[in-house]
Image 1 (cartoon, rainbow, N blue to C red):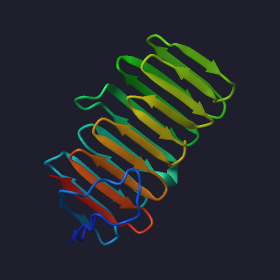
Image 2: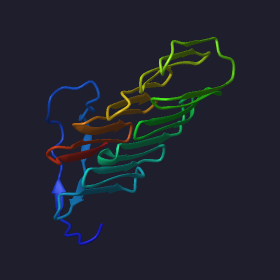
Image 3: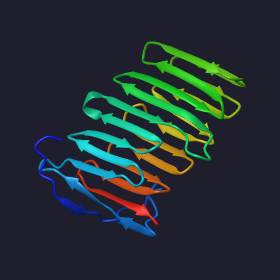
Length: 212
């Protein structure tokens, strides 16, 4: 970041209202981060390979299995993930660019691809689909061998050994082996077996800690 005037801040861990994705702070070592003169946050943990950075309303998050990029003012959201040991996930790719949604998932060897907006819907299934229903528009249901996939308007839902809910705008929740991940208009939150981090968008408050 240009013109950085770093200062070290100590996190406040274990505060806030209850939430189903709130990471357990028992046995957690609090970690420090940098904040520049404009309030942007930069966090880097080389031990776990996790980084988090903000620039205005932009958010960038990376760990060894997940990559997330958000630019709400541009109506852009991108999430890529590969499975960690013990997960059936091969890959997950989700992107929103304006009104267009692109989604790709391979789970336990079964794969699906969907691209849609308000005017068209393209769906490709590799594997052995059990049932497929098209209700018109973007209301689509796919019942596969290893997961169920459903869209309503721009909403995306996956149910299987991996769980995904995305409202097509700015609210996403992902649960997979070793991670609970959530991003919405108020917060960005990730809890893995290694780290927990939480960013409040309105206040800019950030906290992170390592589980020990």
